[in-house]
Amino acid sequence: MVWDSAELQLQQALESSRQDWTTNEGDGAFYGPKTDIIPKDSGGKEHQTATIQLDFQLPQRDELQFTHQYGKAYSKTIQRYYQTVVPSLPVIIHRAIFGSLKRFMALLIEEYNGKWPFWSSPRQVMILTVKSTLEPTIYAKLVKEHLFGGQKLEG
Image (cartoon, rainbow, N blue to C red; front, side, top):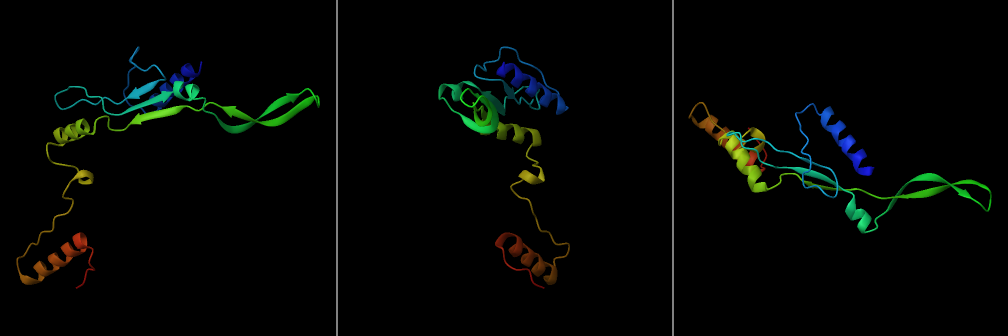
């Protein structure tokens, strides 16, 4: 019942993402529903990268509990209901954001063909002068020192 509810919530989340997705019936998840991110490389080959999986078994096996709400319990002694803390069983979320980091990097290198987007480029700034006269060259060196050396920019 918990598994079915989790699958339904996962399905609703995937539908609300407006991304294409498919169900892989019988995939190796035995302790809870999971989502795999499987992009295609430039040759059309699929690669599993990120995985997010819910685990219902480990918390139960290790008898984990947490309290999060107040419920009602009936007392035969005082013949009425009273507020009490209700213990709950947690769900563990396993996640591997990149899958294999090497595979993820290989996919990025292939996708961008060495022309990295700004956010991941090893060289994010290059300073060029239009003139080769002394004044622009000195100013370019000051900018470089400021950007790469943390020194104050003057003049």
